[in-house]
Length: 171
Image 1 (cartoon, helix red, strand yellow):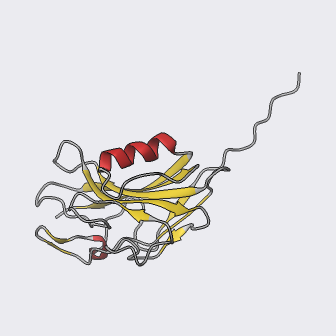
Image 2 (tube, one colour):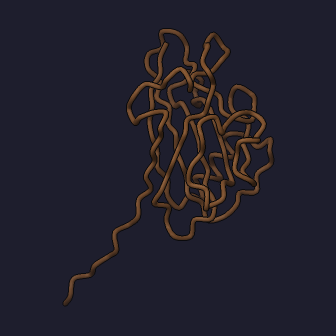
C-alpha cells in the first residue's frame, strides 16, 4: 500500500514595519487620551499565505490583559477585499478614508470606529496586544454599530485561517 501524501497546508504569515512579534510597541501605536500621550496610529501590516477560498479579510487588535473581565478591543476592521494584503501605517484612523474600498471599521472600546492604541493602567505590568488577520470566505453582514463580541463571533465562526502578531506595552 502506498503512503498517503497530503499537500502542505498553507499557513498565513504576518509582517509589520512598525512592530515586531514579542517586542514593545512604539509611541506611534499608543493611544492619545486616558492619560496616555501617543500618536494613536495603527501599525503597518502585510500578510500572505491566505488559503484557497479567501474572499475577504478581517483585522483585529485586542488586549486580553485589560482589567475588564472581557479584555479590550482596540480595532476591528472587516470586509477587506481579498486582493488587499497590506494596510499602511495609520490606515485605522477614524473616518475610513485610508481604508480599502468596502472595508468597515467597527467601534473600539474607546467608543470610536477606528484604531485605538495601547493605554493600559499605570503599574499594571506589560499587556499583550494581539494583532490578528483572519481569512474569510465571504463578506460579513454586520451593522456599523455591531458589538465587539458579535463581530468577534462572526469573524471567528467563519475564519478559514488566521495569523497573530503579539506586541507588548506597559506604563
